Length: 165
Image (cartoon, rainbow, N blue to C red; front, side):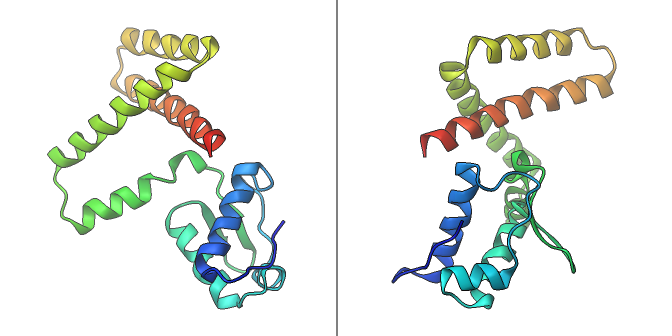
């Protein structure tokens, strides 16, 4: 799964190999990562270097650390961007208007890319969610359907991006 690291910076190389294993499907949501010691030995790096990468991936929401139980690829890879963006806005004292502007820009571009590249089945599923959203009367139902719509678009977009890499 992992190979020796040459002359490149350890952090970047470790991170690159873990991401490559996720993109290739070698590591999937919910999978346990090998022990830090095993990763370090197979890559020829120090355990602190591996630990540093794992903590960074944990902050991004890509890896979940279980005390005494190891490190796992999160079950929610589709939400990895939420944590860093939330932190960025908090650190910069982000205002509601800025959040809404960012969301609108991201949603618009994601929807355009998804529309250009989605399959007929994807389009039908999105239209079905939209129809249910238009018909929903309860705010709680509308919120859940809105969430489904955005997750479907985001999940599909992540798959498109990963296959392009």
